[in-house]
Image 1: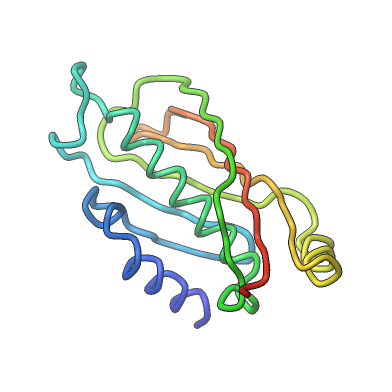
Image 2: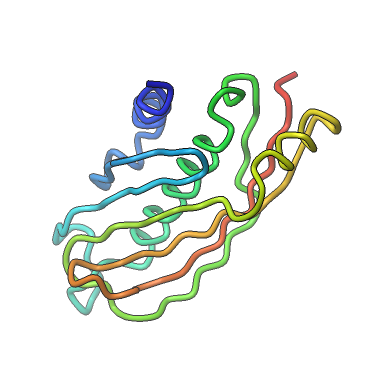
Length: 148
């Protein structure tokens, strides 16, 4: 139930994500599954998914996984994507999907947040095309702090 509220909140507050047709399909405790349609408006000069659209897909998946990992606390937090790294592996053909995950120990991250009032950690994302080919790997470093 809380994950459904997070999905709805993200879709309501991220108009650029909606513009690209990105859908948050699943959120769990530090995990996410997000998808983007194959739309010619999202293509590059090669007729495949544009790098910028893929990056937005990955950033959305990272945010959903981050929020899912801190679901019971997220309304009192200020999340900021601090840094991102993307490694394109193959051309992404057709519809794409991204799977995000918070690596490591969520309990330890929550304990650090409780102790320090802030925490920073990476979220790993894999992007796959319609054929299941790994198209890109992304790491987004998130910074969470208590709302003031």
